[in-house]
Length: 132
Image (cartoon, rainbow, N blue to C red; front, top):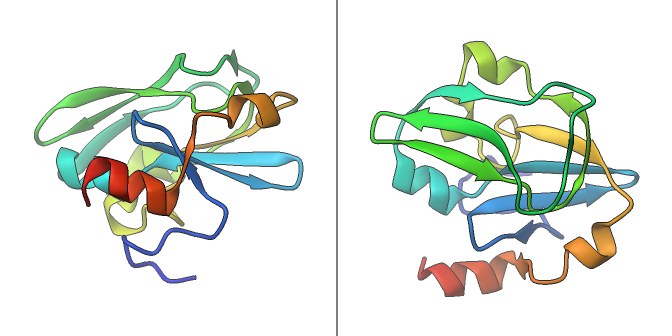
């Protein structure tokens, strides 16, 4: 997989609030899109939820701060947090460096993927929707 910001992994779905979700077996990995990171600029702080926390679709689950602004991050898919990207706590810039790889935020388990993924966009449609 390329670490280029514009090469999203196959099968990735994006929300209109600029989060991405990638289903991998029983786990869904969630992060922020390249467009969101481009708009935010250099990331300086990330606040992630605790493992075991449960969220519904569109609920705020994290906060991110950049040199430009602080933003809330919304769940594109509801579920229970099974893992957080602890590397981001000390190295939030990983999001800028590798948004689709090392810059992931959380992993969840969900039983609502099929219904929650309705309304999410495939990456090509998301790019068109955001004008990138």
